Image (cartoon, rainbow, N blue to C red; front, side, top):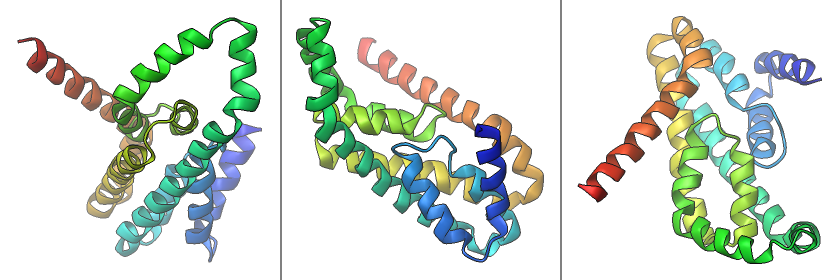
Length: 192
């Protein structure tokens, strides 16, 4: 099923209303959809490189708005779904400890999930369920998603189709390594 959905998403890149579809995919991917908007963005930018940054902007705005939907899902349905599960297992105290820790470091979690292959939707819902400050969540989402989509757009705008393989196969790894190096740097600064 995922492969069929993936193939359908790629075919839509050449549709006259592809930009609207990109906005829709970026929006729902941030809370429930399994296919990342990059899959649609890449062929769109290759086909129209002069629109690369408009495409990245649409993906960023729609993704952040979708992230707010994910946040709302976590905030609105935690009491009905999450809390009874925690109570059943006797873990409400553990969750309170986790909530405090998450809210202390939540902006970093949003940034990391927003640029790496880690599912951003998990963090959007978790941010809502723990009550991460909505302003912190939104600002971190704008930075993370903007960074991710505008780097892809800039690479495609500058290098065109030849960079596609690198983006599809290795850019997620590069983002992950960058985040690990960044976090390692902060740890070294803090403890040295």
